[in-house]
Image 1: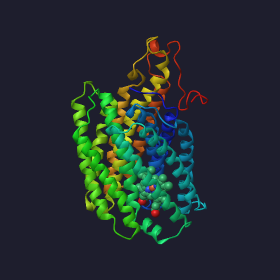
Image 2: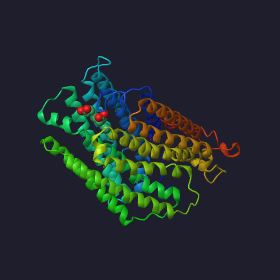
Image 3: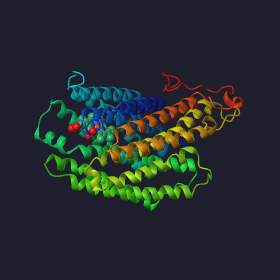
Length: 449
Ligand code: HEM
């Protein structure tokens, strides 16, 4: 990987994220939150934020700490803030969740926990966005994948600020007509900025580079990719512009509807680019992480089409469409790329020091693809079943399908642990003299910068 140095805390971000994914799915299997509770119930807010902050945002932040320097071939600025940012994000999520639990009445917890969590989250995300923005700043004019990341970071700022305002309003700490308007009408904007802006646009940007790299395809900035960026930027701009509109009691729903149509256009252009990269690949046999990404692309397209249908947006179908976006697209892509990235970073950490001095295994020797293939098949089948169960309003089947999803993710995580421990590496090349045995998820030396 050109320009690759190891980001010390990325594996810790990944480990925390994986635990949160298990926790979120566990809650759904137990029947906590939607569909047992209503979409806006505090229990659902717990579930949503364990998944979107705990799982997806930590995963994305950890991946960006590693890959932004690769995208621009420059070193990370302020890498020493990665560990404090992780602590702030975990602490902030803990308080936010505690505040939501207080709101649900299940435990007698003070609502002031909500803005306390919001403040820590604002600081943690601020640190991450700040150090990534400072890193990107050195490389202007930015290559296209990095421009997607910059756009994603801007959307993250919007998401977190609106989320923070929600915490002030819900706790009763600050009261004003403007805040009341925002809480009443700003929820879909917060969700769109977070799911489509921060998480999807950033994933798209990183995937342009990763796909080209893993498929050995030529990296050219196509006109369609540039158009996808401009259209995505316009969509996010409209969603952001809808926030002040809502504050002044204007309806933001037209702006949101246009933003969704634009998102669909951007997704179609992106899909064309992915097909182009696949056809132009030099590596004829695509590895499992690439093949396991295809159902994620399909999920993205289907969920954005669904969200563009007014009947879906207005009814319960919105939950099924968002579920497909979160688990089919974002989580599917995340797990598929983790499958390769964990092996790759482990390989670099373990065998990088002896490269050229002793025979070392190949990256693909760290994973057992035949097992992984079955697990991804089970995972995506379970996601499809769970989405369908939500769409037709069958909560019992939904919990069963999420149970299967949970088992397959647990088994995939066991594969990640086996890659970290070099368990499947052939004994002949596993331990050449001078190799380094990586820790499971902490950096090798806490004193080394
Ligand atoms: C990082 C990505 C984020 C995403 C994708 C996201 C997504 C969402 C979604 C989908 C909802 C609506 C859930 C429902 O109706 O059941 C929501 C509500 C909420 N979010 Fe977030 N969120 C994010 C970050 C944050 C942050 C950082 C905070 C706090 C600083 C926050 C605070 C809130 C609050 C307080 C609500 C409830 C608002 C209300 O019910 O009036 N969110 N979020």
